[in-house]
Length: 103
Image (tube, rainbow, N blue to C red):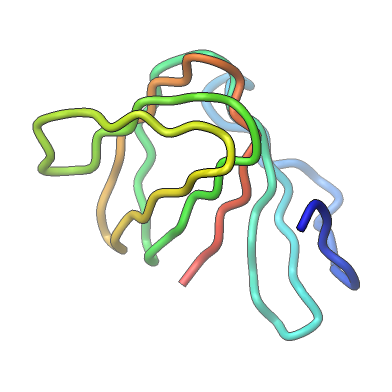
C-alpha cells in the first residue's frame, strides 16, 4: 500500500534532532495513530513510550535495540519492532522514509 485513505493529518511537522528527523502525525478513520516521516543520514537515539513498528518505505539503516550488542541492517520494504518504554539507536546510511505504527 503506497498511501493511506481517509486520514487526519496534523498540519505542523514534528522536527527532531535539528531537522535530521521530520514527521507528520496522522490518524486513520478507525482512530489508529501513526507517524509518517523521513530521517536524514545521521546516528540518532529514540525513546519509546508505547510499542512501535517502524516500517521502512525506502532507504537503509542499522538499528541497535536497547540491550542489544549488535546492530541489524534494514532496507526499504522491511520493518522492525521496538518495545514500549525502551529505546533504539538508528544509524541512517541512506535517507529513510518510514511509517511508525504505534501500539
